[in-house]
Image (cartoon, rainbow, N blue to C red; front, side, top):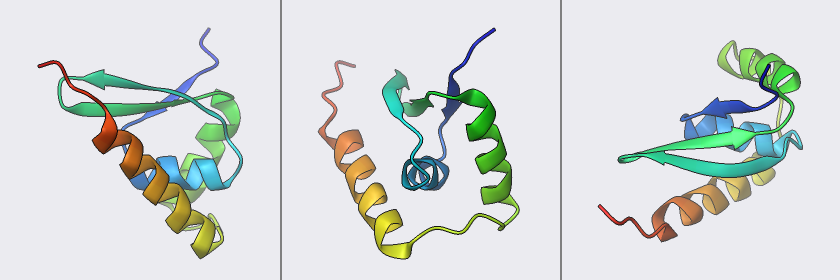
Length: 80
């Protein structure tokens, strides 16, 4: 059974980071970036709260997480 949680949704990934979930890697499938986190059970709960508008996060921290993720995405050297 896997303990990792994957999402390709940038906003969700940013929210998970703000909620102190550890991003362990980014996997690429062609042009699609998957964000892979530890603690699948907690991430699934936070993800559900995020999509139903029940997750509260600090706006500044969310902005910083999004900026960091975008930097990681666009600095990735693709070999396609």
